[in-house]
Image (cartoon, rainbow, N blue to C red):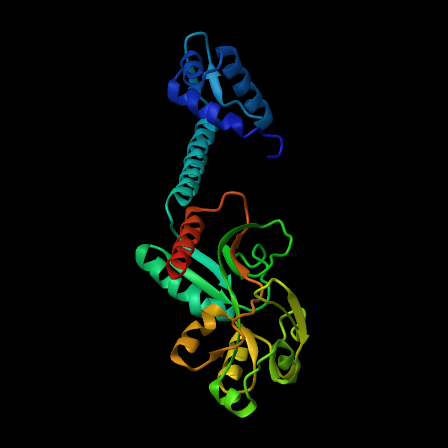
Length: 298
């Protein structure tokens, strides 16, 4: 099988369909001699005679007829496969398998995905929330929504938007421990640390005049994901820095208080990450949907 040039199958089928070497050459855009050469080499590769030919006519041998029927099926299946891939590139279809962190996935991606599926009723989705970095290729994900700085990789990425980091505490905690007035006051407050961060107890703040100040916090409790840290802060465990998409409504409703708003923290990016240079239509459509969703919030 390794010695058979599969391109010759289409020449063979075109020859049988056309009925002569001359007609086949016109259809294929080849010379008559080249068509004859392809068939002779195919017969040599297969080790059988496919056509009985004379100066006036040609006819399939028994082996040739069986091989022709198989070739027609093979080429039809190949055309179907090509058409299927083409449709996937043109119109969102199939199952969209995506992953995101548990906090952002619950707060933002899941509602956006529900709206996306309403707009594409023939599609399905598989949403996997995981706070650890997933291997998109090994785990067969179409895309991931990732936050912050991206690691170098062979994956492609597109920026969807950004989020701010806000320092917050509950009214109950502030009533018990007082509100920090100066950046230096933070070092004496109870801090809810997020274990996922590289430096969960060291934070750098930028003042209105552009100067920067780094403070080391005093940990009272540590959480392994943002959702747990958010719950701890809401229940009065201490102060922490949390993403705006998780705390904006809490601040509006008075469940949390934003602290030292005159100082700013690093604004972080939100990215769609996907394998391959040419993502299918379902991936492109969801990326555009996410960008529109985040733009509407801003």
